Image 1 (tube, rainbow, N blue to C red):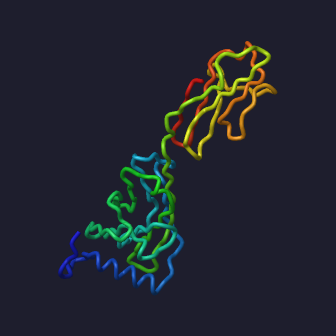
Image 2: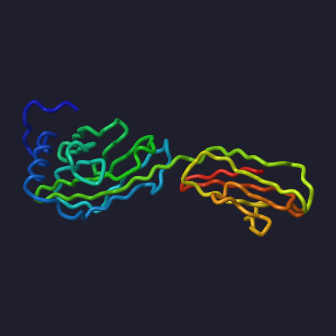
Length: 228
């Protein structure tokens, strides 16, 4: 948004006025502990979807807001500022085109990426000193990828041969669970899992092991299951 060429009266505060207020407030007074709250909605967001840092319990008599990346107030970390009297929004060095600030101070991330994961700080500017600072955290996760499987062999001799079933995935930060005929698999002396749960070893194989084995990979936002 283009800066104004001259002041406008009747309570209007242009972006450079807000910037001056930020500078003076930072110089004169330390911030108070935040009374407002910042909540990530949803708590765990998916890559490619929208996520929002939702702000509530704001004080009265506000001038505006400034959002920063990270957990501190620092000019080079500014994303967006909002002037309440004029509804004027100004992008700053860390704005990348995907963020949107709302009149209530909430910050929207459109088409979020994993790089958006992290801390964000909201500076709430009041008409009376000092200002408030609060920090929120955003978590963005990838959906788990399509799985593939691998079996050591398909023709075995009962009570003699072993079978090794492997659930193949390139995802990290996941949990792996095994099922037999759609029921959670009970481990025994014959049925063991590798340290990362990606491989099931049946040694020796028995007739009762015949049936559908499945592995399910999941993270906080999605899951994927495959038959082996």
